[in-house]
Image (cartoon, rainbow, N blue to C red; front, side, top):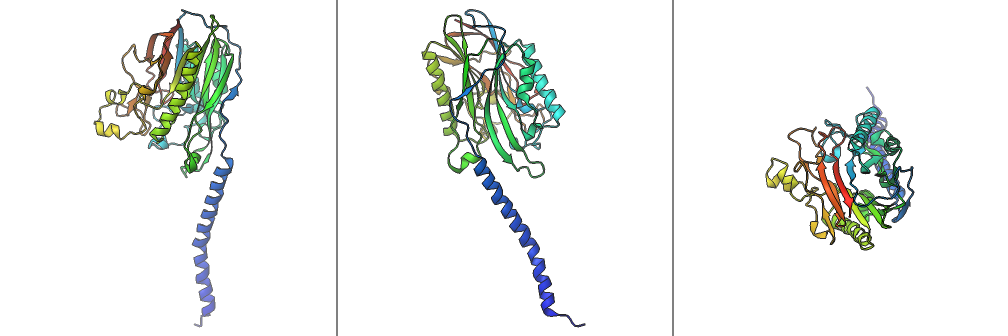
Length: 369
């Protein structure tokens, strides 16, 4: 049978066009996405004023009266005990369901209430985030504490992450919520140093909030709510973040104010908890570079970590590469640092079994001298 050779060659050429077209489309999509990340990048301004909301039932903080503060990273409402996170080597990029998010945030609020916290420092509170089904967790928590003054600072707002490809992590908006039974006069958001150059597009816009609450002697109780960087941040950057925050603490202390800094420091808070809480070789533990020792040498004069735990050393967080079990890596990352004009009377990590978050809350009782 006669075959037209030019037509046969044309058909072969068409077959080659298919993979080339696919490759071209992938390249165009990649270029468009990179352009989107660049164009949408916007760091929140430093020293941003935060507007306190709500009506606190108490006025000025009293001297020599015992108060309770609690710090709790609620893990954007995703971390049930069986949840694993893709950034930690696990599987999931979203919470299990919208109902699960609401239940976890409600459970965390219950714990704060059960511990009669006069001041609550809450981290990783989402709103408008793909990973948490756009649940407004800040409003959900505020609604549970109608007699509290509140301040919310956006910690980071990231562009849409198209990874994992099977279920992209999406856009994330998360922040720091501070609740106070005494009225907050004013507050600001401080932008922490982040990576520079191209790496800044991959880093999260970290921050801490500073809330000023009047005391009966005309001074202020200054509460700093923080969540510093993790996930491979270089040591120099972490040091600069800590130094900036410590400088603000020292400045408030010099004014005669009372200062409490609490939150998720993303460092081994005691300096040795990862060794004491895990049955693993030092070599294995040293490989966990994200869990660096807390830089105690940077703590300014007049301040100290509160680590005299009533129940002994307990973990405040778990690694989420596997569901929570006895085999999980655990460490104490969360806690409080206070100025020496504050007397801590009690501190403990509350063992929740990581029921609602990958963190356990830390509770501290204290008096202003």
